[in-house]
Length: 204
Image (cartoon, rainbow, N blue to C red; front, side, top):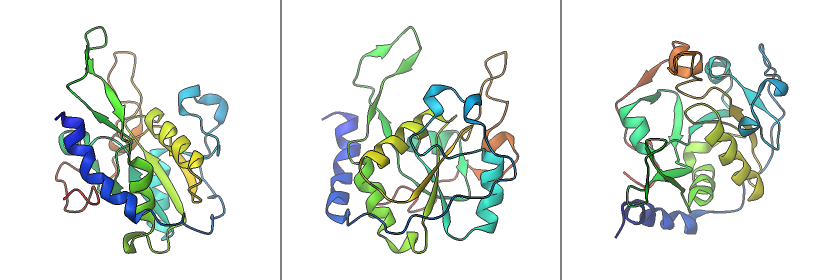
């Protein structure tokens, strides 16, 4: 049994919890520093066309009780690289499967879609933890994986307002290849390595 199968199989339980999509899409947020779509790479753009920087996401979370931050990176990333203290949940859109062929050119293990991502998101939205939430800010490392995750949610008809955190947790790379330009961590917002119980719902 592969790592992917062992990790993903328990999430199938979420399929039975995937109730009707959350009702009542919220109005869009009034942002102090709007993101211009023309400044974004295609990989960061989404069908809803709603974007927010990590720095502003931190401010919004302090002011808006109806908004939640969802981290869609792998659980390994949240544990070893860190995650926002304010994250409501870590629900990975993709998982690393070391049983797949290693990409020597890029120096990475390949990532595969989490087949129960949408079901897990629906289950979380139907849970007590999401009571009153009608807007989600989706975060990954630097904004591309989160955009793809939003695409999956839109395709599935999940009816919450979806913002892409365009610079993610680690931010974009500078000229030397270091992720030190922007992002949650570089904005000086609260983050931690310590994984709290229930961060990945249904897997604790």
